[in-house]
Image (cartoon, rainbow, N blue to C red):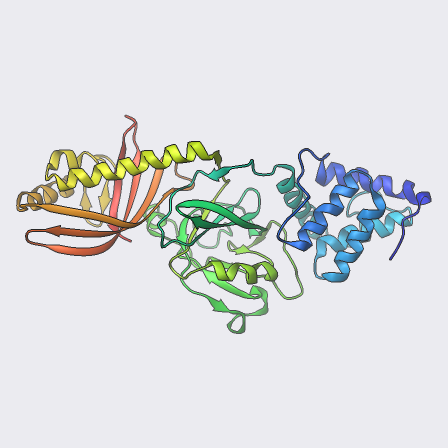
Length: 403
């Protein structure tokens, strides 16, 4: 173990100045007490020690960290800086003349993202506004925050999302909101994992495995978005983590964390919400929103069962509704004709998931299993709806079709 002696403080000060200016800022409300990832926890505690000029504990932690995980390049960079500081030679954080500038920038960005996550901890008893209702069959949800380079795992605790863990991630080189094939951006939307690909069937670049997602989904295609091959995957064996903007559009996490993630993912059952930024709201507000949207869906169902076509069709947008070959006018004509032939209609929803749609202001995605019964037709099906808040303040359906 190397000991940093007091006569080396002069060499440490330039490093601290460069580190604080380029990465850290002075800590405000930083939570460094606990975290599921021991490697990140050690790194954050080291950075916190450095920001408070606790040099020897910071050095000891970083030295132990690079011994335990030699592929953690950010830790290696800080360790190299501290060694140079010991020799009184550094001028700035990561100031190594032979290292590629792009690589150093990526490591600085990674340090900043990891540190900022701890500067702004989630307030107690807050929930993501995007998760309005979770079906009992939906055991877990993955929530990706692109702005903060973070993936959150939630479990369904009797309908309420409960945070299990969160991991640092890398996303597309050109950031968020994928539009076309090859733009190197990560999509924004609500997706599902389509399958698991084990590491034995993948090049080393993808690490411990991959979960492809169903991009482009129905809404992406409606908007004319193109591309394919968006995965949640690991990292090369010799690389613990990558810079925040490093992939061709996929979401990449460390192999250790990918292995921890796997038990929480059920193929085609676990939603993956990818958003620009998570909106955390107090539980009381979350419960109010859940009640409001549950009442909205109940009203649609009750008006359908009433066979009052005017009341039922009032839930559909005159301007924006489309479903296959149907616009609103054709849909209304079809539903009027069908309802007139019914003596009774019974509709029952189950397996209901309701999410606000990322990147689309005032829009919902609703999926559910529908049990339809009438005097002349019975059917069970899975359905997807998109609801939009229109200019008059009312929520109306802009798409309805198979899930």
